[in-house]
Length: 315
Ligand SMILES: NC(=O)c1ccc[n+]([C@@H]2O[C@H](COP(=O)([O-])OP(=O)(O)OC[C@H]3O[C@@H](n4cnc5c(N)ncnc54)[C@H](OP(=O)(O)O)[C@@H]3O)[C@@H](O)[C@H]2O)c1
Image (cartoon, rainbow, N blue to C red; front, top):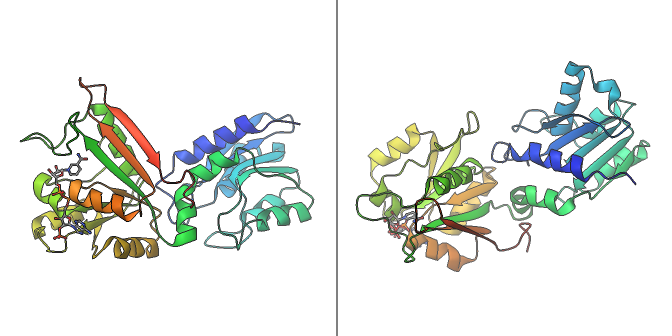
């Protein structure tokens, strides 16, 4: 049988470019193949309210004069069968009689809709091959999966440690990690729909929390959650954060902040806090991923350790 792994890897790659841009939708990528299995083009879902990956792919194929050559669609997520802000992808696919096969990675994590797209396509006579690189595709949408399942965002705790195990920068410095670690930190911000910090960090560092070490998603808006029950953070810093584009929320507890973010369509939140709040998060068991950066001996040999509480955002 034909192997679709490499086309699925391309679809995953296309989707990954837009992780952090699509909330409350999941990132999705799609690749079109001709009847000989040759790659024709690829596309991804770029932002909520705009075309889904399959629809985008068909639209692009039309513009490039490649529509009639498409035989197989390879998609990271099962095509949707419901009309939302955009029309159902199954119907968009079925309009094109030359499309004979749909290959997808994983089913929708919402059990109410999982399998519906596959059934609709099969009933219309399309060959459907599910489960290609399924774990990789589930990993791609782990934040969306957690949000659909629990109503809460996926929580990543980021922390940098000196070689002695301290999180506190030397006097007069805001950071002590390498350039590569700073870029990593900003990549983590870029993929997040919200950042979360504690009053201690704001008072000590006067941080910006913006994405600066790489280009951000255009027009991306993020929440900034502040753990500051005593309201020690002053109005100037709050005004600066708003000028930086953040919508501010004071969290009365970890659970309250997670409820708030989940209800506002946040799929992924990055916690950048000092040792006090970080300890609370670790104790709470409400986190999903930790990214620990350990300062190296030189300027370019930091170590990065990533841990998942559960690899696919599932219990
Ligand atoms: N290396 C790194 O990755 C990193 C990252 C960030 C910061 N830092 C450093 O960490 C230092 C600040 O650390 P920090 O521990 O003072 O600040 P923090 O952990 O950022 O904030 C602590 C504050 O959070 C508030 N808070 C609200 N809810 C809480 C809860 N459930 N549990 C615990 N705290 C809660 C508390 O104030 P209320 O009681 O008023 O609510 C508490 O004083 C700075 O030197 C900064 O440079 C390092």
